[in-house]
Amino acid sequence: MRLFAFLFAIGFLAIGVLGYMPNYVTDGNLFGYFETDGMHNLAYIVSGILALLCVASVSAAKWYFRLFGLLFGALAVCGFVFAGDLVMTHVNMADNILHLAIAVVLLYLGFIANSRA
Image (cartoon, rainbow, N blue to C red; front, side, top):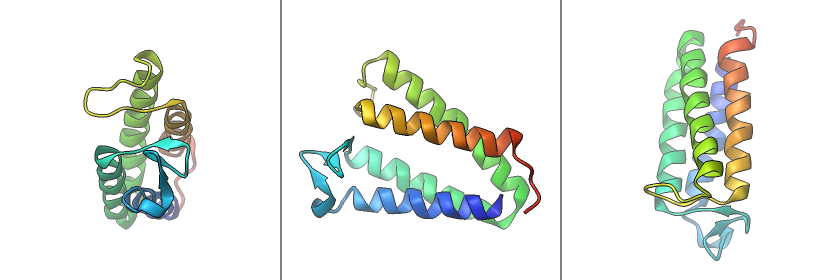
């Protein structure tokens, strides 16, 4: 569990920072696919920092996976239902699919996976 929390921390931090780098953003889309803005980038950086804080214990990692799995799931559902027009930001279909995939993995790790390490 702690290893996965660390991997998610690195991934979220990387995506958040890359969103601020013009070399990786084309027409407001990270890697040309994922809609990005300051709110997206900040949310990923905060998610990464919190994941990094949860690396210290299996219990904290499990709770992180559960909470953020539910949050990313809600974000995906809202993105699909409201056609990407969220209150403080906008998401596209690639974002919705990514958020859904992240939610499934996080919920699996938080509720189903064995928590040995």
